[in-house]
Image 1: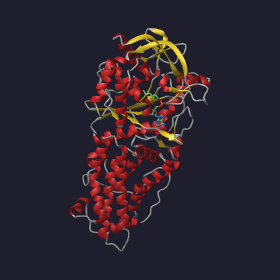
Image 2: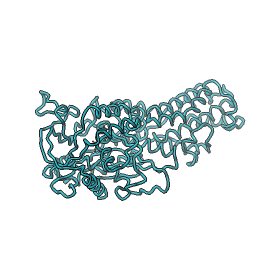
Image 3: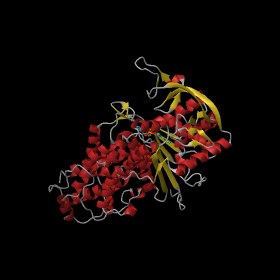
Image 4: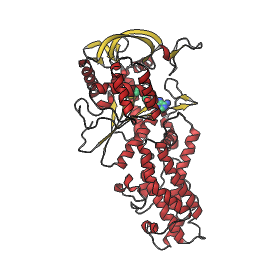
Length: 529
Ligand code: ME8
């Protein structure tokens, strides 16, 4: 990992590291796309910042041990094969991560051992016994209040996940999580931006006020768990997978060698809402113990469901992200995820029909619009009008639909920046779509291809539409990178002029325009020209 920042201010963003116990699904792609949108947005809005973007696979623990055993193979063989699929998912989906880390790598083991020793040296780790309701598939213990015993089930189950639990007792190492209660409460109370959406933070504060935190069991007897990092100095215990996994964010910046590393802490950690507790309590407690700063923001997104149930590898109701991208194209899938999942609050049901609808929307509003405006008919009419630049056009006052488009376009940059600052990806995208919709409407209304209208009017529509495409093209890069790149390229917008500060009306330049197809897959059919 290159952790040198060569003087640039870093921006560190992470996704969860995924369990390679089964093939990746839509939910995993969603976390990747969400993080990628922020990584790409940061690159274009603050081009001099160094974006460090981590993802990877979480390869130890009972879940993997069990999955390998069920298949009759070694855990390492399973992890090699499936980790590769997660890596491929990132590449296929155009995810711009700079690190892909596997927790079976030596550098990670060293980081985890370092953390363990540091906490042990401070007497924050002790040996105790643990009893509770254990779920193998969730890899955690539940308390009495977290389980239920439905008449239809042979065993009690976890209320939250529905997975089977059994009563078990064992000796293991514990981390004094309880001693961090006050500090965690103070921290979350004082930092409104620490968790997004805000409801998660409010709930967490309430929990910290109401319930005493138990110490956290951080090892498993070796008889039960062999696939993991041994506890330093006690080979009869293996580290609990979450202790191991949460440290990955540190490994990702070169810890412990770069202990005061310039890249730490993460600016944004994208996680699913199912793992808030781990990232909002356990990791911060470990960091506080080591005197390290906490992440700026945990962005906890909701879940994709299939027929209203959480998509999950254990239930088997998963949609294949590779299939989806092959069918509709990478950008269409990314667009759909950001548009319907970009508010992060409510679960969303995966729907091929909705995906198709949104794919058609962006193809039509952007791809089709571009083909309409670059059609031969319009080009010819524009050429016959007196030559005018967009800047000269701005001196005239535009009225009617064109005037409306121009005023929305002028507000777009600020609106997108404001939304992204507030983590409102869905709203940012809505604002862009709204401008495109207005511009499409105005184009239809002013009909520049029609010989009924003077060529001067065609000229105005043409220049305005190109500016709409340039500005929205810049803004769309984080969401649909390939189509946006194709568009900016086709408009002759130089690389150096593709950053957000040039998304202001009249600020950037347009070169020689060439008509091209913006989206992979399905054909765009030009109309109205
Ligand atoms: O929890 N909808 O790994 P994981 C949306 N290894 N997002 C989903 C989802 C769904 N249906 N299912 C999964 C783990 N995700 C641990 C994390 S981090 C130090 C260790 C997303 O493979 C969501 O972000 O079970 C979830 O948090 C993540 O995938 C990891 O899922």
